[in-house]
Image (cartoon, rainbow, N blue to C red; front, side, top):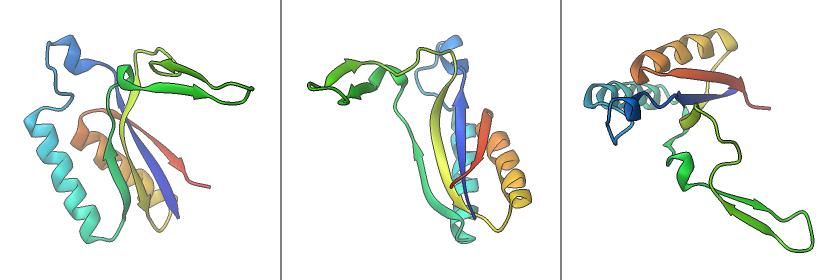
Length: 114
């Protein structure tokens, strides 16, 4: 089964004046988790994302595309990165999401991939 684990950033780094989202300790913990997941063959894809301010919304449903800089939603929380993981079951996914939350020091959102 595949699962999406979204890393939720609530601006905690910006609040204390850091420009990088993760501390060195958080980055090291995420690297260690990634190495273990990679050894287990669980990682399908793992990426960090640019800040929402770097996003562009494109709506080409009409005759002419509408292109607007910025995120689709202006929210205090945003997806800062994600994993797509191949895991045996929902129980393992929940355990792995808990590990990811601890490693990132962030909330995560766990969702099955359809």
